[in-house]
Length: 129
Image 1 (cartoon, rainbow, N blue to C red):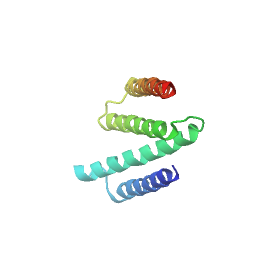
Image 2: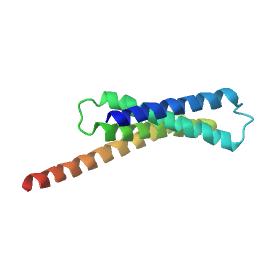
Image 3: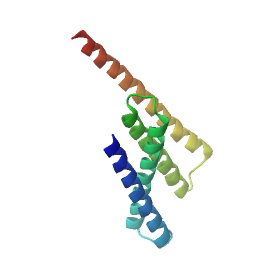
Image 4: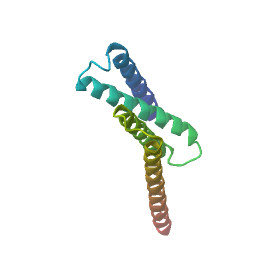
């Protein structure tokens, strides 16, 4: 698990440096779509890494700490980029943010319950043998 955490920290730092270089060197109103794609892809990777590390620290007592943190970091970065996309196209309102956050929270709860049920079935089958 230490190798994964070191790799995650390295990737997050690299993505953060990439975001800062693109933001500092290019004018957002005068760039083409390739630079925008670079910015948003590196922002996505940076937020995913930060979210994963934050949830990794928060989930100290859980058994599937790495998997849950990775998934929740992904959902957090998707929500944030979706809100940035809505803001860029001037369609962001408070209810759009609340709806997108609610959808991702519902999705996380559904996945968590499904995997919890699946893990309980697997453990009960292991105990039968």
